[in-house]
Amino acid sequence: MTKKLFWENPYQVEFDATVTKIVGNSVVLDATCFYPRGGGQVGDTGYLGGIRVVDTQVSEEIDIAHILEIKPSFNVGTLVHGKIDWERRYKIMRLHSVAHLVYYLMQEVFGKDCKPASSGLLDEHKERSDYLFKEKLDKEKLKAVEEKANQIIDKGYEIRTWSENGKRYWKIELFPVMKCGGTHVRNSNEIGEIEVKRGKKPGRGKERVEISPLS
Ligand SMILES: [Zn+2]
Image: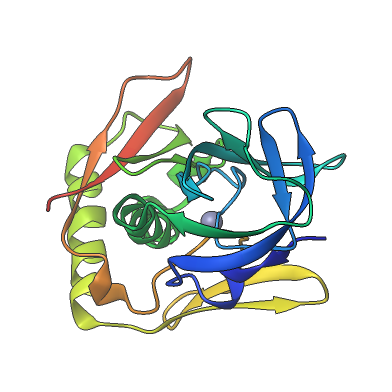
């Protein structure tokens, strides 16, 4: 099993680890800062042993796979240096944290009229989640969600993530605990001002809500 450095410290950018397996262009390490695609969050990119990592994925057969642009020039047993694309990852962390916040605020503002209809999807540009609404999506209410989210962001609430019985959890002071294995910021003020918009309609009865950073 690869040691998940991205859980121990989501702010760690560089690390050294030993190669434990190579399958084609995919490399497995004994430890990594690279977050593998999952829970709606895209996989990290960066460099491993000087070679470009184009994606990180997880599978039961080969564990956390760092997918390289070319076949690796190093072998199993080699100590390699890894570095994630921090600017991209930090944007993802900020968006992932605010996505949880908006999830709760949607239900607070819209009440029973709104039901989550998908788990979210996020990259460094935006987060999208689908909801089922009884009535037409009220623009004023969506604006209220945005305003409330920005107020909470501004106040600087602590955000915690931790492991318990093999599962990962997330919590911000004002809301209940959420199950999540993603990477998150430690304080809401790191998120910065965001925009909440109605996205392209994903299907009958559903509405898509998109969150993007303003800076
Ligand atoms: Zn999450």
